[in-house]
Length: 254
Ligand code: NAP
Image 1 (cartoon, rainbow, N blue to C red):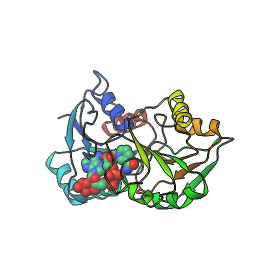
Image 2 (image 1 turned 180 degrees about the vertical axis):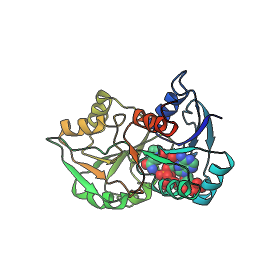
Image 3 (image 1 turned 45 degrees about the vertical axis):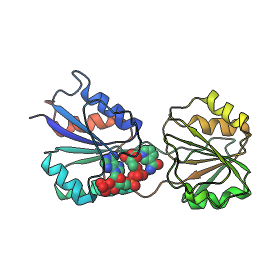
């Protein structure tokens, strides 16, 4: 029987991991199922098996692991998807299945950066009136209610799917999905007269060029800190490290 690996996904790294695992000859003894929450209308599906939608909490996930004879779980969800990470830890523990977190490191400021940390979207909204008037908001379409009362500010909101109200009264929506280029980010800042950027500390390369563009333009950046995640789960920083962890589970024969 091949090793059945469940990848909790929704990130570039999760898709890259699935691609590695199904690549011919990479890990012949592995069968992969990627799980997506279903938040995005037309997701880029990874190769291998896929399923979409919640499991019904930690108990539902534990039941799914049992029913589908899962041998290992890799939580490759976004650093801001805290609930599913805690559910994964609890479910994997309950059914005694090994769990690895594939988590990209957070961003680190460079010389010239003007970063303002915030603990939440609400905290970011509180900081904004003191920092600028034309905001590039890149925190996604969820949670925009936190910015809805800021009527004196104008927002450029970038998201994969269209946001739903409540959201800021004065705004333009840009539907787009990363990766983004430095030239493209520079052009957005220039064309829209952006004077402050808001981002989550998502980490990774795909959306990092906006930070460089903000530094070059000399504008402040509100960086929303990551939520807590289970601290007793082994962590890999790259899909390659995750593959090495899986090989270790199977031993040198794999
Ligand atoms: P969350 O708050 O941690 O999860 C909320 C619920 O969504 C979970 O309890 C679970 O429902 C379901 N869920 C989350 N990830 C799932 C997955 N990979 N497969 C199946 N069910 C999943 O997560 P979120 O912040 O809403 O993010 C949802 C998804 O979008 C994640 O997969 C994440 O990787 C991706 N994403 C999130 C962000 C972000 O900023 N939060 C950014 C980019 C991508 P049940 O309890 O019913 O199982």
